[in-house]
Length: 181
Ligand code: HEC
Image (cartoon, rainbow, N blue to C red; front, side):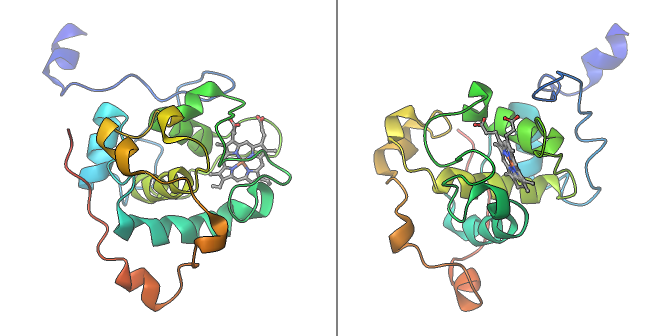
């Protein structure tokens, strides 16, 4: 087995189901589209989301959030039927990492938290960027931000946010992966 594995590019550890630990077989089980964007490839190798705090990626992430998640987690992640996603408490501490949050969303957790692998990897990274953006806690506790991002991050204020609609989606600019560091 050594030869095949040794010649493959360095790949991160398997993505695992948050409750069962079962291998989620990412990317094989993901939608064919959106698997090989720059951000998706980088994420699969490193577990790091290059869309974090990229303004042009947030409207799409918000749109997916409002369609698929807010009914249970609240409009701004304040919690409803499901737990809050915008504070610094996590039932599953691994959700502080992009990889862990991806695993929970992609594979689901307990009860009503079903799998959400009907969105492409690239779209899930935009969704994760939006969830991180809604964070209301201290930047110091935000393990998903780089040291540089921690300096400029401002906790989310729902009352100051204008929902992404029509023109604003275009005005936010292009969704481009940030430079990896
Ligand atoms: C039908 C309701 C429902 C929907 C829709 C739903 N969730 Fe959940 N979610 C839950 C429940 C209930 C839990 C608690 C499950 C547990 O503790 O295992 C949960 C747990 C979670 C957790 C773990 C939070 C923690 O504190 O560790 C995350 C992250 C999460 N959901 C994200 C999402 C995202 C993102 C979406 C949209 C793609 C979504 N959920 C859609 C009900 C839902």
